[in-house]
Image (cartoon, protein in one colour):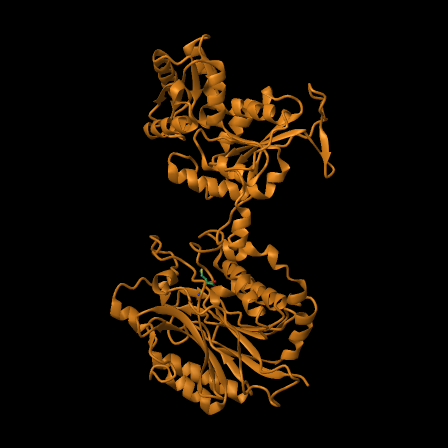
Length: 607
Ligand code: CDT
């Protein structure tokens, strides 16, 4: 037996700032009477239906602001009670949006489902996705959307609920009472909101909205965009999301607009519609005035999608969806350097290119990991090392994705960059034979990589110090800032090389100054610092930042032939090549034993 229910959207045209509540209530009652005369069983009203859409105004006066909110129980408060009384009298269920002030002083953008059957509120939803800004735009012509200022994000989740009293012959076909879900305006643009309802078997999604037709500070191409064209695009996006998400969750949906030109100037789109589970619009509004749309919806039509194409239990692969709940913002894939695809060459020791998964690659592939997010530094390092590579060795540059800091100048940057870099390296690590951490410090990423992988890992500071011990008696480090000098002195001690250190000098510059101040100024300072270190007894100098790589020849010239200058990137790459040729791998019997098993046991494998 079909489960047909008659659903309606009560679209509401312009509601001006100066309109009285009584006037707006009369319009709402009129729409309800019309719904009754058309036999509608459920009527959806828009978001913030009892007043104008006040979040477009900056309101400093506390009393005025509170006057836009509904306080206490909306079904008994005199401001709103008449709507619920009439719904009960007409035996029509209603869903309506309003600005909610709670007894304990919280404010939400809310809607409720009122059951005329029980004469009570069956379910409440508080808007989760609040669009716009907290602070108003400075531009006096901007259309403001200050929902983040006036409301807290909803705290009730997307909870589907059963609605009694709608079906003629309950309980019908053993499927139980209809399953409804609610969302408000901007929520409809988020697939996550729909899917959470879809996963509860929702059959009707209700969504009231106030969507600006022209708000160039918030969306659209530019303030010069033709307002009509902007409205058409806004309408297109509205229908797109209602249709697409109804289809992918095999549910009916109803949307009800507050539309028209509020205060004669603020454009809000219409486009109220009722969509079926195939994503087809059954009925849509034709005006931007008060208008009722009605459709008969056979909820059994949801079955096809729920049992075939979108049979979630059969087809969803939740193991691949973790990012959706664990990550809000975007983490881009790492920026990899160019992978040369020229003909394979034979190496000095007889090794040559090998084929992995049908892709030709060099025998030794080193991932040069720049843990900061400044790509030109990575590119400079790769460029500098390229001419020195044996034919079977390839160095691929990796730049940590945001939110890694653009420069690493202290412990905070160190840890934040290590976390961002490690998350991005984990999925690609197996493609590389060794890792070079291109930050001149005792960087956390070095130990993280050693713990998690067998491939050899070295940092450019460690590599410089090993080379310096091999090539001279005392070394000096040319570092960037005064703080870096102190940190590197500590690291030298940590690495156990302090007995061989003639000193650490600094250029009084930040990491990014090395680029922004220009090569002449930077070279001069670096050469001066280098000479001071030589005067203190250093016969080897190391460049204390990956960003100094390109200036090695200038420092060499300044200190003369008898002093050796070491760049950590070169030292690191060739150290790794040597270790690889020895068949070396990271030992796992001690401190570099991975703690992954423990994380899995604690359910903390979150990367
Ligand atoms: N009310 C609401 O959520 N409106 C937003 C537009 C905000 S930006 C102009 C919407 O998504 O329709």
